[in-house]
Image (cartoon, rainbow, N blue to C red; front, top):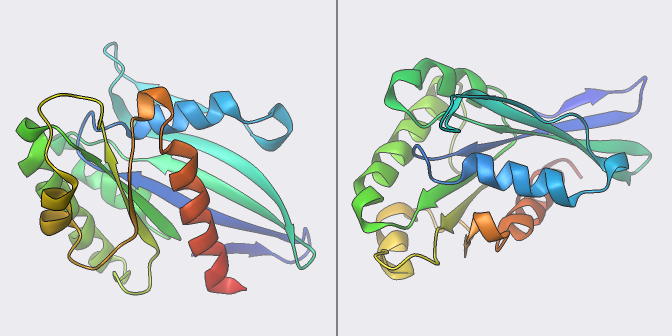
Length: 192
């Protein structure tokens, strides 16, 4: 949950990008990092394999200004989508304030989206997080590709809780900043 440092007058929110392997979680963070002014961002930390797949997590701290005299900071994390890193995914999800679930729109990945969402929900339960109190948005990524699932079918399978959702092409930056702004508003609204 939000980390409040009263002596430094800072509130830090943890946002986690969750989803199946290669869905675009790291691409989202890289786009954000490349677009933000230097004074707003910290160091981008990424642990990846030779083929650019995240092994553990990506981390990007951001400074969003102040609210009621407190500096607002975001720490953005991604989880590895590969099945063998289930413990890492669960650990990164701990004490999260908000989640952007990055779904891959490709038809051949459809079932992996469902599996990943179920995995996220199970991991949330272990930490006492629930769907009603945790800000979650769905980002339907890779909308520029040819063989994709319709938004209606994605919503029917993934959006059982009426989460806010948006379409994206993270590699082009489409929907990336919009998702970040939306989840930021939702997590900040919880404490103001």
